[in-house]
View (cartoon, rainbow, N blue to C red):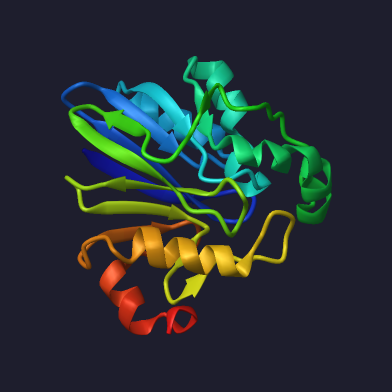
Length: 208
């Protein structure tokens, strides 16, 4: 499995495209609103988009999911607990100063333990609530890769002061679901720099 990660509008969310050149299968995680860039990447490599996974329902992560789905036919996957986040999307758009995006409930509901396939590689969905009630992380053991959304950052954690946030739950999610992963696991955070589980165990002040 190969990966391309880049920040997307409106708030620099890290969008990841996971793909297998042998099968031409691709998965997009957290498309934000930069649909032209994402579609351009897929087209240039003759990739078929199989699924669009959203780690949580905040606008900066989900804004382009529905439109990307309409253009490609790929289903949108996110946790049903974050359907609630769609109810205040207009307020999120006003806060970020962007147009109201087109959103909809998930085509496929992500749940704990659900398997995701990218070519020959299989990943697993981990339900990691706290940033939002439906926050998920994606773990691909063969690639030693974790896409943590806004649950875990390099030496930080996701904010918990927005609707659905809970500081105790996010700490519990990290301690119970993420820190037990192999310490060499490469972590793609929802924003900012990459990290590893080992680094966060040693350096994250919120986990002391």
